[in-house]
Length: 517
Image (cartoon, rainbow, N blue to C red):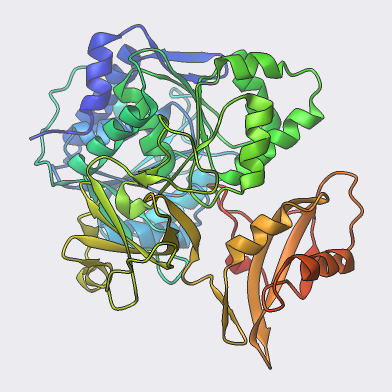
């Protein structure tokens, strides 16, 4: 029997006065976060929440998130974190699909009225019994008519609570996939899934108790931020400096002022940091580099050019990892103790196996032969919540098939080639967008690139590239097509190039290729 909330409880016992979360001038200690989480647990139990009940949470990177997250767990309930950008109709779908009994939603801002959308979604959910609006001022009245605030609900509930223990395989969190191929599905992750993944992260990064300061720019509702930053960080009493929405200039300032030692981000965030350094001459890059101990990347493939640039500016080599919501999320990682291999997602983490398979689940064994990544180990989800058929499609004999294509070198290091669904078939030849994007980034004028396939009457698909130029660069679309023709095989180079000011991204910083055409 265990409960994932032990990560907070243990650090609060050992380091009660250590800063747990920082947001601007606000600094909460571990004992304060623990006490507030206990209040949430007491309130939920008083409202009838039972062990195993689902409780949804919509909140950006604010101190409320870990307080409510661990409070839900302490009560023995299951956390259902929701993307803060969801609209009312989408929220109702998630509440209904997860069978949530209660929903806690931050009020938001005029630009992002989360509370209004959340209350509308709650109204469209059949079995959800309780709605609590998390307000910036706990004593303030609810700005949403008819909604009870969390501050009102917590009144009279004490800061001490005896945590409800659960079986190791019981669900702790249901994380919803992005739904790029249909309706979002809830990946049911157990207490042991998430606990072992967090502890394995600290083993990888050689984290020491009460020493690291994380700059948390990854959304906590996403598996990357919640495991690598929050759960792993809380387990060693790290200090989490919160940034509610990633903004490169603000992030650079915090790296310096808070003496950050640990940064985790997706490739576009590193790209943003590098650009921000160029725009802010007053930043003490040497001071940032002196404090920075670990930099990790995941979420999507990291261009080699960004690895090189970060090493030059920050003096730290990015450790690239790989995983999915369904794998808690970390499955492979670069080995910090050995020379990194730029472009590689590393090797399987402790307790996890990885292999490559073909569409019929047969193992692909050749060196540098391309296959779909399959994963087995302590990190694999219980399944998609209430979707046995969808679960059976992706899990067989304990192996989870990811949909990502990769190759393995002679030493066992894996390299992402592309998403199976993103692969372009042009005139019968397989074209991998990742390879084209990597090459485009070596052009002196190119800052960021995204490659997709578009319909073509003769070839089936044609290769199209969307490119953001570096400041002051003057390369034209015709120039880039001609350059690509010189650098790539005839079936690979993009015949269509479009120079753009920005690219669509998810809340977690991943490129939204499905919105490109």
